[in-house]
Length: 411
Image (cartoon, rainbow, N blue to C red; front, side):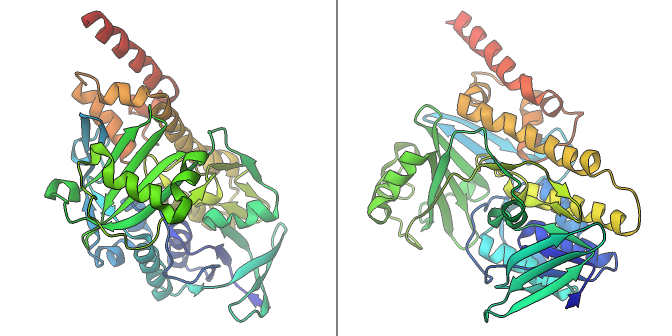
């Protein structure tokens, strides 16, 4: 039986950030990853806040060398209406840019950089059974050859993402309160891309805010294009090898013919019902991070930021725990992560209710308000000096109501 200090389940951003940080503290860490890398994944538009997590875990330099597409802001579109946010103008003092990445390349870069630091990274290893206790955790897993192994550790960090290993094995999952939605997407040649379009993610709202399109440019000249809508609409778009998806993005009026003659890099793929939560983020001998905790919606590109933020925090808490400190997992970890999730939950709800669009597409938007919203969009959702973070649950519907009344009076 192999024995290490910490086993991290999953080699995505949450797992590699956690493992790299713990390795720097002198722990022996093993990662067990079910997939073979590089592998395709969505969640391709990062937020500036995650740069801090990559830097603190020692992974930023490796990513910088990949020359990914620089991202300086986000543009939201609704017909002829347009609102751009530039991270350089945000309220919170922090990173003013980040990257747009093909996740196969990005995640593989993080995994290889983590391995180079001395972490034992094992691909194509499926965790089958986990037994936890106060001071000893035992995992059984199957490797690429079908052979079974047992590994013992002092603590487990589950960063398995959509695989949700411990939530599945320990019955920790709970349904999301959001309407079930799905996404269909592909990568396309972007022969009509402008210089402006290279530095932003473009989000086009349609169907009375029930559906939207993302356009995420990459440094190789291709662009990720996805449609998010209710499950029935996504299933319809995916029929006949995604023919309706292809027709829609090539003819959608608000895209102005940007992808009319573009070739697809691969046939459209789709996922359904991705929103999910958990009953608890921690337990005896383990903690959850990344999408193993909760995933809301892709609208504000929060997935990787929550992965790196929770991965880093889970590693810091694990370090303290293994050093013999008393860790208040509820208040110091779960409640902290949940606060960030709840802020984005309010903004996701505001997107689909239309309150967010009412504010950003108003005839006039105060620059201070815009800068404060920009900080949320940059991922700084733990900065309670920002009114749009502190009052996240009420400020969007209240402001949208005021704007509607004012515009009605002007008419």
